[in-house]
Image 1 (cartoon, rainbow, N blue to C red):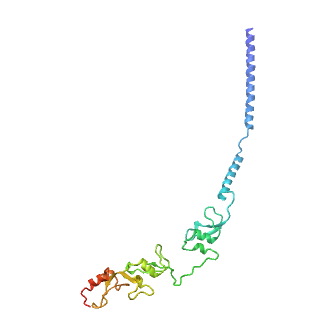
Image 2 (cartoon, rainbow, N blue to C red):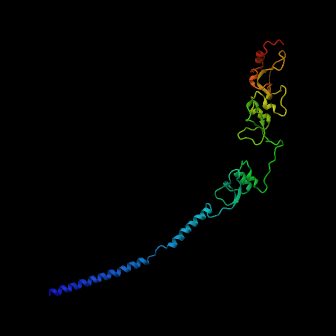
Image 3 (cartoon, rainbow, N blue to C red):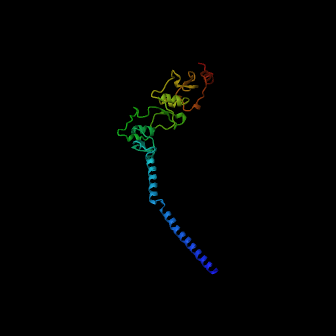
Length: 251
């Protein structure tokens, strides 16, 4: 009786374990199948998505800052350099735009000494020279020593020079204290005698050594009859000059 009970129990346990194993095996394929049925990311679809994003970025860059492509206009070509710079009709988001080529040259290349931008116009303007062939203004010639300094209107004018409308104005403005009178002597009609205005007078007096002692006096006329200011004594007033240079003069 005991042996039979043991055998029956063993048979029951074995059947239960077999059933559990079958259930376990049956469940595993179902989980795999459900996992396989779940949607997986498509590699090709991911590539297409990235490409669309890149295209949107390219479109945004080409449109500058919106969805509308800017209209073509005249733009300066900065890559050509300053002296050879010119304007081109194109679409450009990295430079200012102008309605005409002339406006572009004036706005982007104003002061271009070479005039290259303006020369590229269909009908470039021509610059008429002044009647004398030089500039219409005068400037001091600082390349000369002060006693020999003059005013000129030669082209091209060096940068940083003051300009004057006339040679006389230049001499008075740039060489007002020039004792040699070199600048004034270059005038078309330089003074040869004592002038009636202060324009050709020095701010000091000097003895007239070119005249005989008995008839000589003191002068302040320009240009000076000598090269260097130290060649003759000079005085602040005519009276001081006469007393010092002609004190014993009996005439």
